[in-house]
Structures are given as C-alpha cells and as structure tokens.
Image 1: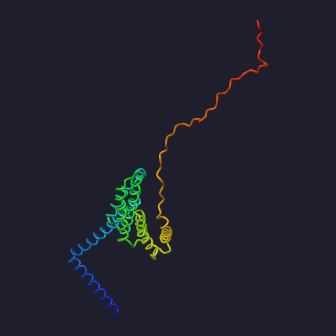
Image 2: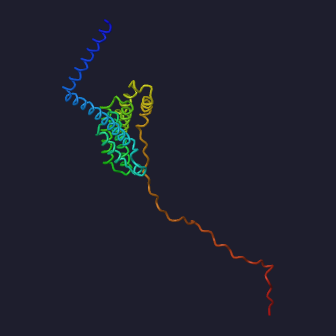
Length: 246
C-alpha cells in the first residue's frame, strides 16, 4: 500500500509540473515564438552567408587563375589588361592570401609590360611600368610577408628591378635577405638567391655590341691588264692549195 501511495504521489507531482509548464508556455507563447523565429532566421542567414562567401571565393580564384576567360580571350589578353584584372581583384580584399597573390600577379604583369615597352623603344612607358611593378611587390613584402611563396616572389621581383636599373648593391642586399631567412634556408628560394649572389658580379658587366655599319657600295671589279684577243686560226703552209699561174 505504501509503495502504491508513493507512486501515486509521484504521478501527481509530475502531472502538476506538466500542467504548470503548459500554463507557462501559454502565458509566454509570444516571446517564445519570437525567439524561435529569431533562431530560424539566424540559421537561414548563416547558411546563405556561408554559401555566398564560398561562391565569391570560387569566383575570385577563377579570376586569379584566368579560368573565367575563354581560350580566345586569354590568348588576346595583354600584360596591361592583366595588371588591371589582378589589381581590381586585390582591391576587393576577399582574403589575405588571395590579395597577396593578386598583387604579386599584378607585379609580374607590370614587368611584362615593362619588357614590351623596352622592346618597342618606349623608355617612358618602361619606366612607368617598372615603378608600378615595384609598388605592387613592395605592398606584398610589407603587408603580406607571412605568405612564404608570394613574399619570396615579390623580393625576387624587387631584386630584378634593382638589377635592371643598375642598383646592384640593392639587389645584393635583397638576395642576402632571402638567403638568410630561415623560411627559405633549405628551399629553392634560398638556393636561387645564393646562385644570384654568386654570379651577380659577372652580370654587372653588360655585353655591348658594336653598332652595325652600312656596307660601302663599290664598282664591279675589272681586269687591270686585259689579255690579248685570241689569234685567228690559220692553216699550215704545207696544206694550203697551190694556185696555178696563167
């Protein structure tokens, strides 16, 4: 009997708790509905933001690698157009890694534009593109040095530009920084920097070819003492016919 009584009391207590909970929910149903709605909205927004961010990153990587261009457009793209494409991508600042790689790509494209300007003899444009390349590389070096690959590439670009303008002491210092950096000590970057340092003095002596001269036109050569004309063939006297006298 006592056991049954205790069981009955526990059931009554549980029933009272459920009844109180139902009453409490009914009394606060509006705040509860608002909270539930807020949670649902947060979940939906979070999912949308994640998918949108992933889509933006995918598009940015496609722009960086040039895979968003068709084959014909990629073949016709000039270095100047690549500079614009990379610099616009860097300005979006989607992620630090993407920004660093875009700035490095803009520097490389500016170097190509500089070489093209030199080839066509436009020294002013070549100087302008060299300055732009240097600005892009310095931004990578100063703001994104934690990314090893782009940092090393930017420093090599700065050293190359220093060599181009004859500042070999500056180039030597940059190569020395790369060689002494523990991140590059046993990597191809450190080995390449050492190779550049070993041969930098030899490269300071630029090969200069003599200017081409125009050939002088000369009259056609003629014999100084022309030989005598060939003698006419004659018949031997013994074989000549005898004309009879009349």
